[in-house]
Length: 120
Image (cartoon, rainbow, N blue to C red; front, side, top):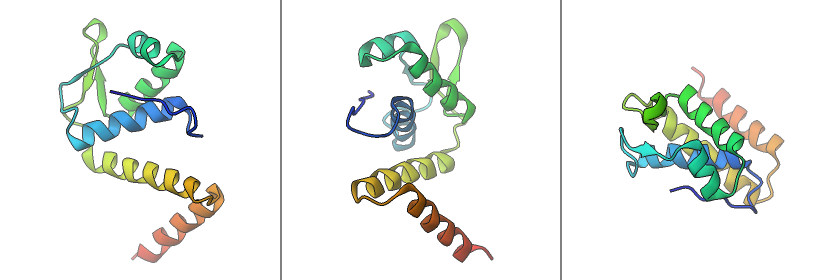
């Protein structure tokens, strides 16, 4: 379900978060799909449980997953797919910019310019 790329400068918790958002947005993990427990995913990926827990907390804050106590966590039915799509595209933009050697500062400037051009 989730893979960590050790060569990617993106922190592992963010890689987890982005991949789950993408899977929920694309429909490969529809609403109600159970996701692995924090411990199970941490073991599978060879990460600290805290790293996975951080990703899950952010996903829950963003409404992408629901945690149901002992019943585990599932993809939320009320996930904001528009926001998810934007987050996925932003993540893709950052990865592509880094591949091209564009600095984070320049990416921010480009985005700010685009936002200002579209303000009405």
